[in-house]
Length: 384
Image (cartoon, rainbow, N blue to C red; front, top):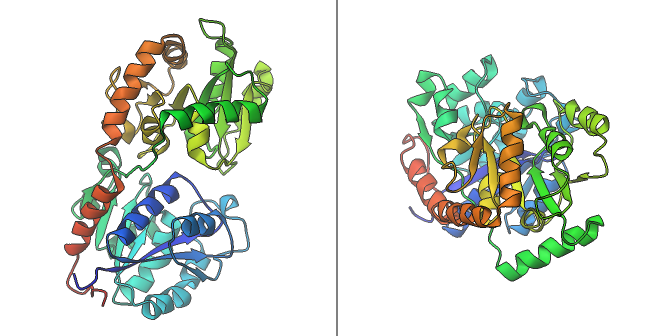
């Protein structure tokens, strides 16, 4: 491939979520495979810059899209996305980029026109749910290829988009030896001021409506102790974002579980906090493919997962996790109790989960994505 492709991964600097983390895993794996990868950030600072630096990925800063904080901006077309054209088009030329690989709707809208006006091919990594939107459909018309993160996500796309879409699960690269997991469990409990034997039920992700973090309050109301007497606490790791899950606040107050529902915000390193949990939940609806569940499986933590999303394509109920209807609250309570009270069953789930994520390595993911790049239209050049 004459040295590989030159690939730009654009982001809004002050936004960070599971999709961002997944795309950075891919970007690093592509770089390690010999491609020239550039992280392009709209705005100064932000967690994305720090994460990219930790992965040894070069960062090029572009003008911010808006002075309004990223998570305060609703997900819709705005004029500043068009106004980004000049800087985006210039950086494609300056860095001699072959591919712009977008990972969210804001970047898809912002970079479709610069790609159309340049030599770069647009690849839209579809990590979202499809809703009728003229700006999104117009941008998808420009995309040379679309990568859907699950068949669930693929099925919601219009037929004309599906014809140029490939389904490719995300890659996951967390791993931790047993000694480190034991240490993390003790450190997190000490940091939070919890008893050493406390059972932790974790949810990871921004606290938006469809993530349904409020289910944690319901569970803590129903489950105060495990069968062997350990006190049960909830851990909601993530930030406040719009549309915010207000039920999280109202139920926490109504049920009087505020002292047991701990909300440390964004946590680093996330693997320590995840490994400290006795079970990780994903009660979301319309979830294309949440990365917190395979990450927990890689760390040998049992998982309970909503049936409304792409994760059901990876979870075999009772073998490598448990599946629940997102609105079946008694089912979530029963599933969580089962994992907390039956250690042998929980251990069996972790063994199945470890086998699942062993197939989803960054190296394999990058190789398959590079093969997708090879099939792009001939108008795309190659890096020198």
